[in-house]
Length: 390
Image 1 (cartoon, rainbow, N blue to C red):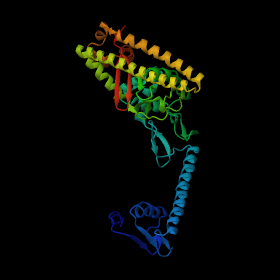
Image 2 (image 1 turned 120 degrees about the horizontal axis):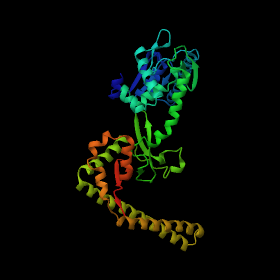
Image 3 (image 1 turned 90 degrees about the vertical axis):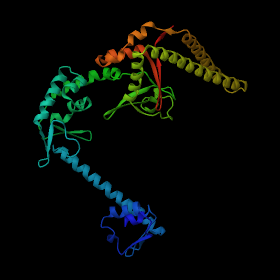
Image 4 (image 1 turned 180 degrees about the vertical axis):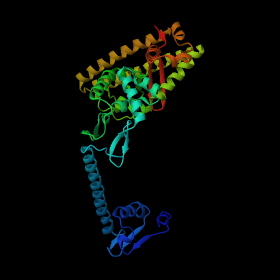
């Protein structure tokens, strides 16, 4: 019948009673909303005088929808109450991801220690307490570092059952002492700031091509994405244009594009020279465009002053624009006088052959010395190199 409705073979479905269509209110509503209405098929029930081809029948659909929604929300609320009660009593809530160190005994509802994973957990815990980083633990265990972080900082390991922001005493055995857990949290807190500041290769070098705001790195599940700070409502000082949404990109897409061009230059001095010339041209082109924009703004303000509109405020703004124009003009003259640093190419010669043997700080040092910025316009990247001197 559903297929015939979709194929346009049925005008109206007629039943003697509603329960002849389905004994489930949920299924009845689904048939009416997602099948009959969708394919412009009428529905009539003789006993209940229910007819969706009439205004009254259409109104009844709305009433049914309200009660169906109430039923769904009631079931959800009862489920939540049941899950919270289980957590209060120390049982694992069931479903979802079971903590790494444990297995779930469905008969008792209690977590039990997995001996093999307990050995891995103890190794990660010991090494972490001794100062090992997450990348080092990943290299040793073969487990993704983001997962290792979640494993070591899971409160369930203390014999507790977390639920919806609350913590309850569990019936399962702890695999870590409170002192060890507190020490892990201290290490996490002490290293978190420095990791955020230096962990990302192109941090501080990415800019939005539309509003000029910086791009930020952010962990997104198993991915690390980069997006414009104008989309970060929690930091209003960094927002340049809240109404524009530049595309969000995976960090590896940007970093791979940067490294591809860097390695090409490192293997070919002619390519290095071409890139230098293009980089200088790009910077000068950008400065000229900014000068043109500022001049247009100044011209507009002159017109406003001639019309006597808010003269004091306009003059203040004009002074700011004139100062900015002079600064950009100076930068443009400096760019035109720049010459290639002879040591720049030597610094990156055959870099691709040793890049993977360098630690992060060494790689970041190359970025700082060679890269001015990367401007991102959705899928388009424009790389500005810092390979010249006045």
